Image 1 (tube, rainbow, N blue to C red):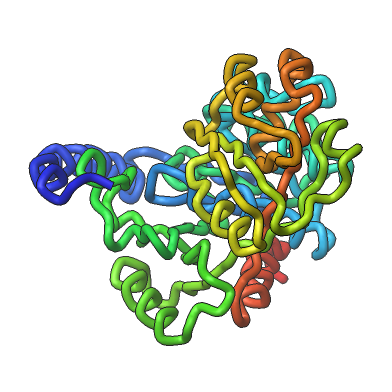
Image 2: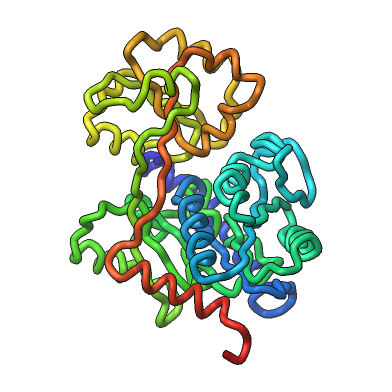
Length: 357
């Protein structure tokens, strides 16, 4: 976070940037620029802020719910950080390098269930590809598409972190918002993410009131928390060692936007984090990076990483550098607080119901 004095100095640039984006949104809102319908229901997940708000596990929650409801969903992402361009449908020969780490994570998780995953800078072209290759689709989840207004979502879901909510932030460069707080008015549902599972009712009420200042009347404001799975072995050394034990010394290796919640979870579970290797979001790990990890690692320590990081760590070029290191992946899912799961499931069902039903 910027020092307050610097944020104030940068505010004029933020106003200019916000004005440009407001003009673009005005053109879409008034029909001068066209948002194309998706031909199938589109469920968009995104945020106003740069950085991690929990989009990946929320996309996974939506896909799992669509499958529970008997739908045939697909996932469409930009494919940030990939080494390819243009519309591309993920297949078994792809990797995080060719489709991006998050889409590859989706493919590994949902591909076996028959859920197509596509990437495209232009979401309309991506939708065309999905419809051509998978005509039986009944819904598409759009990952990180809140500002991508070339397509018109059926259900627009805005995520914002409890610790860094959009209603307390400013537009770049004074803050971290991609557009002004007024952009929240496009949301059909607002989810306050990364909450403590026992978030008090008073805190919920305060956040609800603040979010509704910028939302349309009647919009649902929900709350979600992270739920972590037990560590799963990523490397042969981890499989040989077995499940790590609370109290065991550990290293944390991440290349995600917000490693803080995982760090907090590990500490609460009793692991002794002795070293951390924190890289930028979507970081492409190198042999040199892993050599630095190995230099700090000692026998008896375990190494924890995330699902998203694991998609990049499994690159064949890193196999030798990882050999002998006990690396474990910790999966994260979201849990909607209170009646949030039922409310979101109902919204999904309504958005995907056949016309006229």
